[in-house]
Image (cartoon, rainbow, N blue to C red; front, side, top):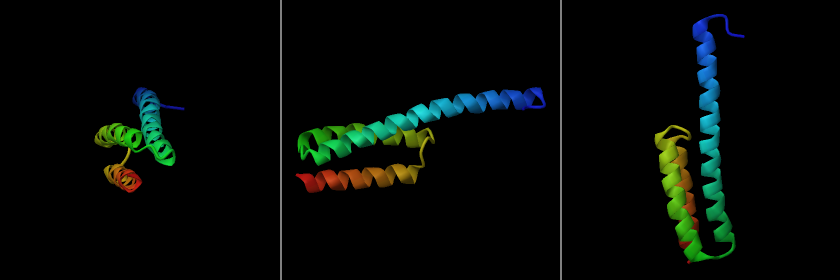
Length: 87
């Protein structure tokens, strides 16, 4: 429990930030899953389309510090390598 007005405000801000970041992280996971699903289906065209969308989402979330920039780069690299090996 917050003991001061400042602490209670920070608690509210932290809760709002958590909700926002959690939703953004979910969007990132969904985009990555879409690429992986199309790779498993051996659909190169769909995989490339989903990869472009996923890269955009990853870059955006990294710039907003939802995920670390190196984590975004690593994920993009691994996905692009998998798509490249597909077709």
